[in-house]
Image 1 (cartoon, helix red, strand yellow):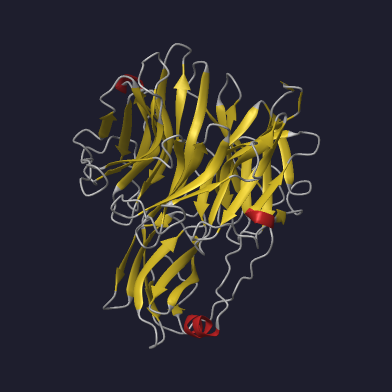
Image 2 (image 1 turned 120 degrees about the vertical axis):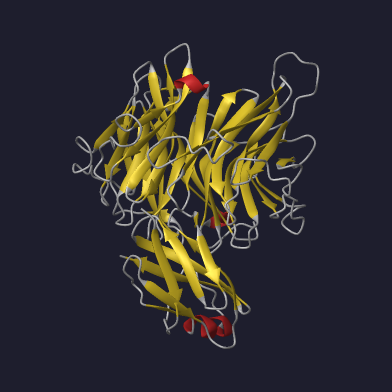
Length: 520
């Protein structure tokens, strides 16, 4: 269900949240860390508005995936599914979840099912109580076994509840699916609901890692384009890939080179992306990894809305972050844009047998946030388990950070059993600019009523000294929500998928300010 909310005038004084250094949250599990199910990897994380944590648990090897829900203290929420879990299985050898997203109280899931000889893509819909929704496809599943799709990688949902899934049809061809809320194909998207794009070169391959919709409803796909290691004499390469489609599935010719952007930090580097983050300005931040011939480093690239590299950002549009300034392997797997504009990246960092859950916090300009942690980096292992990596990430309404992945013990290259690992951290609370002028303006930006009921009209007001230029609404998962700002009426339409807390980023002539909006 789509909830329409409108914003307008009255004085509202926001409570400023002071940034605190990152630390493990001792109120979660044992010292902030939870080691759980054997042979499981936490691939994706969703955080409910009440703080409960939903984790997609993929098998390490053969088996089915399942979704588990945890209470705020790290205990299993037995009110969800069967004993706290909802099984995701299509038979065959293995079923993996690639991504999950909330919409209207429903958890939409995409993934890949393997029969041993073939793999195919599926989507599923799970209720807030942890049961498959029978009205979605067949008994909660839509299976694309006959479409020839190889693997899925990411999912997003628009303001009308339409579902977009990205992945690979083959090594040299990517796809985007658009589904209706019942799981049927949306034929308004490229006639049949599926758009494919080929490299047009059997020696060049695609890999997709993320999908999102920008402020204009354009569909963004990121990943990498690379030369396959198949004996072809052409020199190898790996470039960041960003593709932008129009809402009808056609390539957006106003973006990059006919809708397709390829980016390389250095001719000798191998670059790939993990996440695309949407800025309130309409520009993009692409987070990923760079291999410089010695090791992998965390990287961020800033693109203008046109797909042109923003050379005013970092070094020619790039920041390459060698986390410990040595030759350790450092591979990012996820990223989020915080409500205050900071950029949070997570993955692993380590040397040999020892690898850490790692959090790298960057300021909005790409430099390291040293108030978050020394050199912007916080990392931890799981007690005696010295080999860990995080891939799922979520943000709570009160600014905590949740990571999920795996942990195990390794010695001299030999590793023991693998376990699901989850941790929660303090230190993600948005900071507020501490200048008298900005605080004066911010104190005169008001929202009424707040909190508001669903579909209730609201108004927004700002001081006469500041003119509102634009407003964006961001969910607690760091993703931009569809919205429409009417400057003449000072009203904003927000298409909020569920009730809860949202953050309104207000760009004015006196600076950018953040207000919390609570929708009941």
